[in-house]
Figure 1 (cartoon, helix red, strand yellow):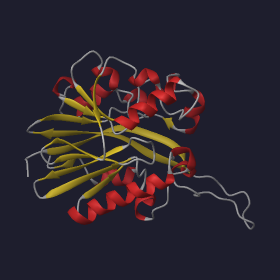
Figure 2: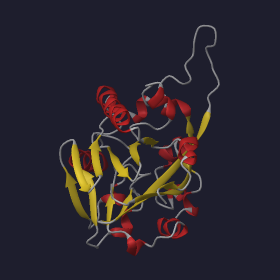
Figure 3: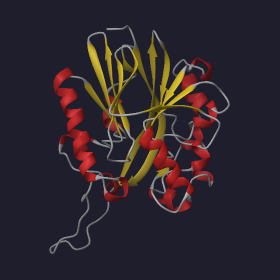
Figure 4: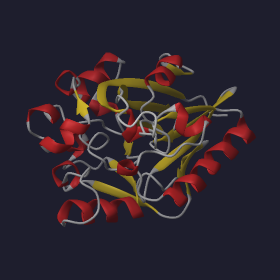
Length: 267
């Protein structure tokens, strides 16, 4: 295995109703027709993969003005990145020992506004931005028409970026660093298998927001799910990778899971 590391970068907290994240979490019944809703606290994170072939940034988090009108108000009311202003990408990278200039390439798991809000830092540069073909298409379709999903903002990604488009189901970025297409949450979500000395990291990303999506196989709520059939198939892909490698599975927004991995792997 190559002597690489995966350093986790905490990008703040989102508050949202658990019903968005776990399908059927708060459902009425005959005996309890008006159940209380539960608000959850979720992490936004990035990762730096420090590899002999380059330094790769996984996602770029939210725009720091998410709560100051940059995100549409109805969306922010549903998913509130309450401390986005305290989590500028450059400052958060500095906190874990990296500068923006250290980043050789960016992998965008998908282009939702809590994952693509920092892409502006790479506009006008030659830094490769990896994105799946299906994601790039759907993001522009959503942001430029009244169709698709409201979770895409053209101002995040409609920029002078050096797109490196990923096709198909698997793509090798570097030795022992492989991307996997995991459609379901969106058409073009990507996860990863990263083999390190003595351990493997499996990035499930927003295929699984929280442990209930993975361990109990409960889908995301309807507002976060593009295709339940594809979501289930992608879940089995990640589970098969876990069976084969015994790797640690990193979810998209589960705070307890994120914190359980400390600073990351091989750091």
